[in-house]
Length: 413
Ligand code: NAD
Ligand code: SAH
Image (cartoon, rainbow, N blue to C red; front, side, top):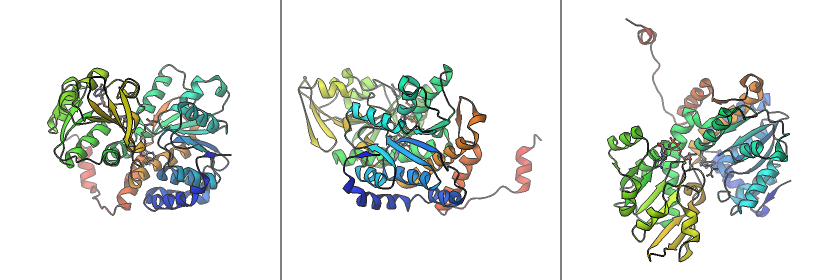
């Protein structure tokens, strides 16, 4: 069973899937290598990820390794409808379309869970939190789960701290080969892509304000600088603020940056980062959006419901005429702009993230009893192997330490 926007898009989706697959060599090599041993045979896997061409390669891979897969979207606006149609045609129980209402979004997660997944893969933890907070799903026997993003890991660790976590979870985000590359270089590039598709204005010479200098913020700030923008960073952590300063960025509080910024990009995972008072002090013409989890970093509710008028002037760009007479603009309704206004990260970087996902699912299948109800990191040997495979796929050679260097490096003398 499935529910998608338009099943006739399946052929287009197939082409998109093939394009991604052919650029996700390390993931497809892993799938080919494990196909014979069928490590996910007979397992029901539930996937709550952005339904993109890159995710379809992971889903089809899990199926090839023996799993029965059900899937839904991790965001109401990020589904690629052609990919959803392609997956439905290929025997995946998928409930996803773009432009969902909050109720539809919720319903789709529940439909995915109705297939009784034994392994649950999430991005942001909306489905994990449904299992923990909704009595309807209390009886589900989940062996274990995985989590794709920073904020999802924070939510799961909070559950574990209160001793309420019902099954082991692997924090895929915390693998080096995930967050150092996906969060930084993936978001760095796809954020520029999302903003350009929605506004198509020049970055060069513009004053761009990036909120948060974590893995995502660093990538976004560096790519905006690469486009010739004058970048100002806002932070609440003194070490990160110092790092941004020494990386050569201006650092200022949002109350100051708001007055002079022309483009704003939030990347904190926090709530209320660009608030009503900041918005009211912005220059007319300011464009703002978010690439962190959820739609609460920029006060989208204020912009969309308390403005004098709101109209979509370009796809994924709302003009909000404020009561003070200024016009400001919101990208992608304040939801992760790189997936709403563009296609998310490119395949090569998602190959690393999703190799971590696939190998973590297999690890859970084999080891769930040993792990206990904890949030653990991706085992080191998996993380390192993915780096080795990625270097190979990119034709990059490196040195090996000599025996003398190994000895020297371990000696106290
Ligand atoms: P991180 O923890 O490395 O960085 C977050 C940074 O924001 C920290 O340095 C923190 O001090 C700072 N911060 C917190 N509150 C702030 C505030 N009020 N003002 C300014 N700075 C503030 O996390 P990360 O890995 O960079 O992820 C950030 C967010 O992006 C998370 O929600 C994550 O889930 C999401 N994410 C999105 C994508 C994407 O594709 N859009 C990719 C990866 C992660
Ligand atoms: N559900 C939350 C999650 C934040 S999205 C929300 O929608 O607000 C952040 C995650 O999206 C990242 O961890 C990244 O791995 C994932 N992502 C980025 N590009 C993607 C792509 N092309 N396909 C699938 N997932 C992608």
